[in-house]
Length: 316
Image 1: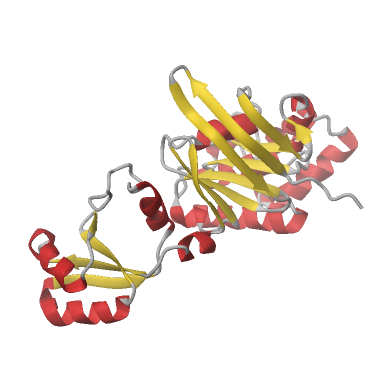
Image 2 (image 1 turned 30 degrees about the horizontal axis):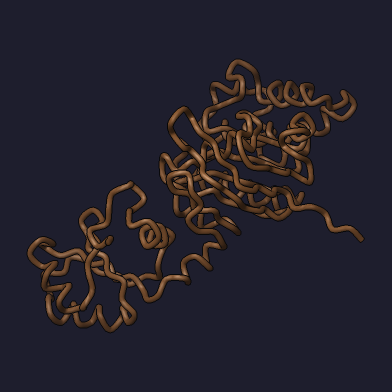
């Protein structure tokens, strides 16, 4: 039996805007049914990559196959396989929720006999039934995002592309939105590719592609990436970091990485190190915690810069 092709196979993608190299030799693979994250700071190339996959930009160099179809030669067919939710709203704020979904369904040629049933199913799935006749422009940001997601799924796409989907949502609405994404993937086996710059969202993905300045710098599951770093992270906030930092570095035999008002250390035995710090500095410690390495630590270790783009003081 012939194996089904992966949901997406990209090889050596490069893209330029004039003299700016937005993507440089990007290659990766997404298996069917995977929740896959494109993680990177502003300027990393993830938005350009998203627009290429969504067929909004021409492929300048390299190759992309989606469900076994070539992006250059089969773009029209690929568009029928894609559901896309953009960072900026793409629903009509003047129409009702029901009208937005049905309008999108007609664009994709869904037969009239199926349109009402499919609309009602998605309204129920995303808890929008009681908002069916509501004008979209009158809804909260969280509810509008649900309408966006339902619209993108009207034609039962094989691959769902989400660009910074929780932009503008409060923490509660963000969690609810991500619950819906997970439920959709588990329910229908939809492959989901999402761009994000938020670490907590990236940690909810099954596989990640870390991008920086147009290059792939790491890939793997969040757990694999985090466990690739030795030691733990000890984060300390003192009454005067400038005064206490040299003494802390001497005590711990490690260099500090300042983040906001805290000093972060990577240490193999962080729990015992914390005890030493508390014994030595006592009430001069405002707060201290031990944690496993984060995805931001992975990014810093690989690039020498934190996620804001600032150079690490410890980077060579």
